[in-house]
Length: 346
Image 1: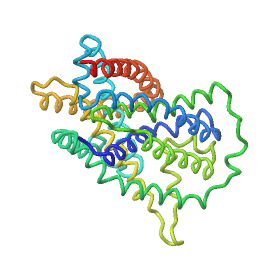
Image 2 (image 1 turned 30 degrees about the horizontal axis):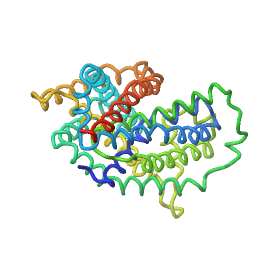
Image 3 (image 1 turned 135 degrees about the vertical axis):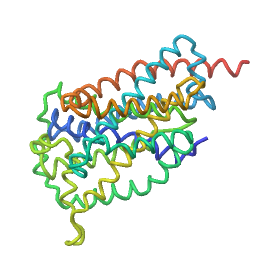
Image 4 (image 1 turned 180 degrees about the horizontal axis):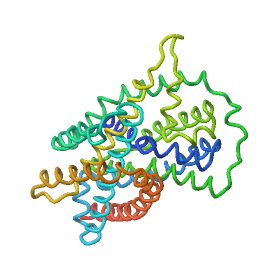
């Protein structure tokens, strides 16, 4: 069983993972300087949805997600397929956007296929060792990630200008609601991956991760302004270039950006473990390896090779993750709640 610290660390990464290259850019494009307000409202709604996942974890007890789905028979088979598609979609998204991020700022002349190749081997290796290894790796990276995140937030505060955030409440009502929807979907849906473990409570880790996202969004708006922020695909990285410590330590954005790399790495690892958990036991390791390899090839040969395909993910992922959440989580909640009521009477 995973510990409370391991669960806290894992869900912290999941809360933040989909904002690299998608969340910040898409939401700023819709609600401009009101984006950090959308983040705040979205966090409140997100806590209510995280509550459902927490209750499912509590009700299913020591059972695995696969065991719960077996109990549900035909409906469980349908949910298993939806969950498998969900895990595969997240894996493709993570591999595609980490390639885009790395090729844009770090490895400009490196072939796209080579960038995520080390990630592929690490993901398969960690998944082979099981859930505990994945969560322990997340916990080991957690202090480094938090340190880099807090250092960047503190260092960037001196460059913030409140005039760049004013005036507020300029966004059309529909666009603001859409921004809240995007934030809630992108921050909450990855927590579905936490169902591979037992008795985890994701509320505090979600709030902590959301706090870092809210602070980062405010700094993006306050440093480069909403108009310029909409131009960049990775505004969260662009503002890191402003960091200068002790008036002589500069150009450390690539070091600080490791916190985002950690987010995506843990998120990819958990997506891989989630897929493996849902596969049939017969030759599970082989089938899992073939699926991960196939998704890797898909991410750089088909999707990552053409910018138009990346845009499809950019605009549809929040809708897709929201649909998966609405289809799966309420059904699992009702089933596990009913089982919880029936079990004591036996």
